[in-house]
Length: 138
Image 1 (cartoon, helix red, strand yellow):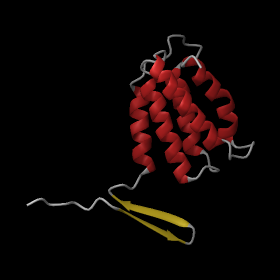
Image 2 (cartoon, rainbow, N blue to C red; image 1 turned 180 degrees about the vertical axis):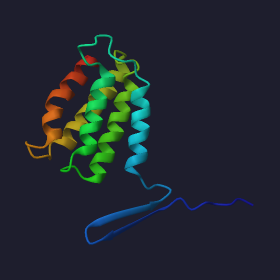
Image 3 (cartoon, one colour; image 1 turned 90 degrees about the horizontal axis):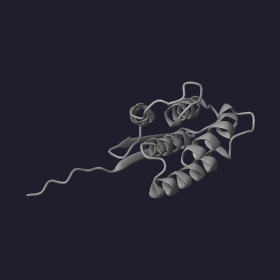
């Protein structure tokens, strides 16, 4: 006999708070840890006075996590995009990876576009996103 495990998610909305549980529920701490591990696998910048992909993604990750104007879901989405860029950062000049990086950077810009201009993440992204894009040759 085959046993089937219930992997459905339970989502409750109470007074404006969303609580997700079950196999598909996300945990921002889990996502953050996974992203940190992937970033840590990148080599440090070869130029000590100029940040490389590792340092730029670490900075962007930190600002995303601390941004009060970004919803929990948007933080999770943004961190997943940082994960994609960290994975792509292993070989940033490869053509297929450049296309993935371009799409991912556009998605991040979309997430950040709803932030007020004074938000720390809005300010940081104006500097960090172009530097990250440059590493991918975009």
